[in-house]
Length: 283
Image 1: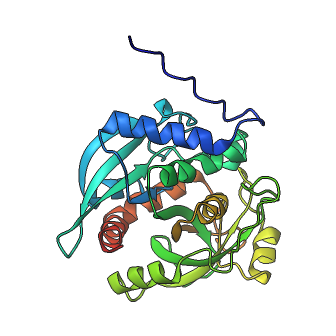
Image 2 (image 1 turned 60 degrees about the vertical axis):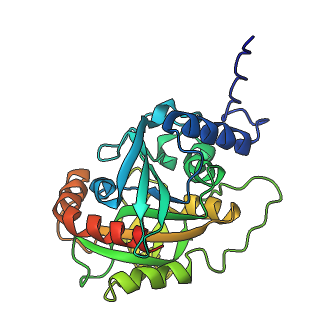
């Protein structure tokens, strides 16, 4: 006699352990894709969606919102599917990549647990490394729209954390020096910068951009840092790559718009797609 599956814990219930939901999500992914485990995860931000086609051979594709703890993406430009992709490495070995579509942003009001759920699920599937990508505003005139930038550090200006209770995690090296070297072996000219995450969804004011610059930021956006913290807590190596889609407020002579972000991402898609695919094959 078959028994009914246990109900998935409610991620929004404060009494629920979010890692229980991540494990349930990993079990669903394994069952739906037929792939028992994954090695590396990729979270594709604005402008990066087309990169998934170049990473490797798609083994399975599932709607992200059907995975426990996930919801439908509410942001134009973010994929609504999660894929299991087989990557062939330069030495002939293969790795399994989990490409997560449908990132949840803090400004959506669904809670920080939802923001961190993707990387926690990736860790639960067996991933030991995650590549976090985003589209962002740049503070340097030399970085024109379409420029990819490696993240070497970040400023979390969201006034929150994905960690709960007395959970202390060393963030001396949030973004792996080893993985940055891998990325530079693919493209030695990749610049590095510090990324500042604001809560959003409004764009930053010129004064806020100047403040971020004085604090050491080179890039500003609305994602990534909370996921990076959660990933480090899970023991994963993190590689962060930003795509400069526009000059930040006060630096750009034009008003900011999300359509500008999407247009810059589309224009840069062939270059950044091949860059990300080559990096993923090299990790």
